[in-house]
Amino acid sequence: MKTETSAGAGAQVAARLAVYPGSFDPLTNGHVDIILRGLRIFDRIVVAVLTNPEKTPLFSVEERVAMAREVFRGQPRVEVDAFGGLLVEYARRKGACAIVRGLRAISDFEYEFQMALMNRRLSPEIETVFMMPAEAYTYISSRLIREVFAHGGPITGLVPDVVEKQLREKSARG
Ligand code: PNS
Image 1 (cartoon, rainbow, N blue to C red):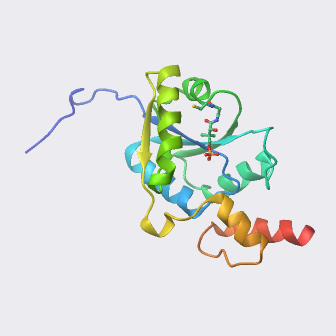
Image 2 (image 1 turned 120 degrees about the horizontal axis):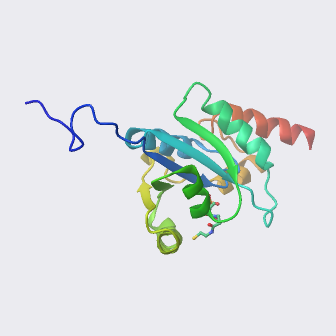
Image 3 (image 1 turned 60 degrees about the vertical axis):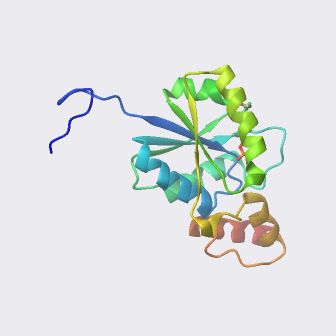
């Protein structure tokens, strides 16, 4: 049976853009998995790296943006950008209809629930969409990657190759 969208055949449908915000210090394969899943639902994803002057990150925002751009080079539907200030204001400026967040475990839920409801209060037209990563990535976090790497543990397969290379270069520089 032939089906048509409710907009009708030939109608222009606005591209659906989502913002995927985070610290990404560093980007992990769990983040990459969420972005790839997001591309199944949204036309474009903006990976928005938080410029956070309160924290002392391992990687500068420029380094984090550069690594994510390298990972998604050749994927025109993914944009990588840095942002500061309120997330919903940024999402609105980008024309996003949604904010994507990954949910790994129940422990993520409380913080994510609070943020989603605050963001909804601030900007009711932007939906928060939670996505679950592949089971293999449910225990990975940027914090654990930093910790394991700092103690010489193996992180191969948990982060993109470019991130692993940058971690090694950073630790070699001391
Ligand atoms: O990966 P993270 O560090 O958990 O991401 C947190 C992030 C960037 C999504 C959150 O800190 C954020 O949105 N910061 C921007 C400031 C803001 O809008 N705060 C209010 C959120 S309810």
